[in-house]
Image 1 (cartoon, helix red, strand yellow):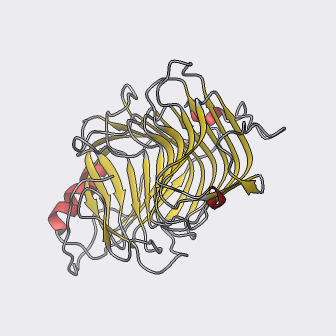
Image 2 (cartoon, rainbow, N blue to C red):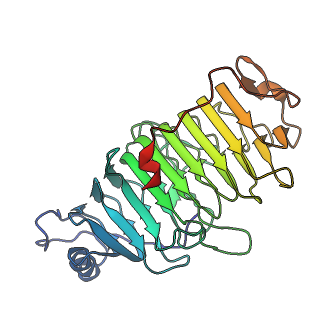
Length: 346
């Protein structure tokens, strides 16, 4: 979920100020020069259409930071980015034709957070790609002018490894907030592994079509859906761990609209919010959505499976069988042990 920003582009000739920055198309060279000067000072705000390599241990995110077509943002291990301003104007966006490369490690992940890491403090990370969606091509994102979607399911928006995001979900309007990470038509050429979204006011991760996969996904106390998808996402999540310790969330997992059969290989979702929680739903499928799920462990949810809008149970295959709303899904040996995922606590 994003804010409205529409950019025109024309060619710019000249010499860039930073040695690590390569000149590309840009709509306003003076503004990009200012953005680059701010990066030197450890401040992320503005837009770039160039290759930028961060080289400091910490940065302040003071507004929107947008990587436009032809640009790339590379973030080394151990980097901390703190959203010092709050609200809907504080987010990072990677547009169609741009890339983000997050090179965290298990002992030095990249962390993007607010000072207090409270839900709703800042926006989130938005990535727009060129993969297929059931909504078509050049679709306008929910809340504004970013465009996403085309016909390249193998599109590459970069690499994300060992990323921890906290305190996302700033309120956009009465019905919408940012997600921790929004994957808009992101293609399978994008590598995503070892990601954590903690304390989000909306979804942890949401997929709008596309074919991107992810491995080792940790989602804690996201207030709407921990994993959400729509518009025909057809990727695979391998080893996803979801935990709820607070009341008031919507679901651990929600699928909506057409079924392009995403896969979940190893899914553990645990709620300790207590029996008074009014919205404890494990897996929810709306309209004709579906999925194939293996090695499933659900614990502590009032309603493990919820089929809405006349959705067919046959669209959801769990351990090789049609979903059963009356079943207790705790496959022997399926519960994921995240005790070794110490990076999520950074």
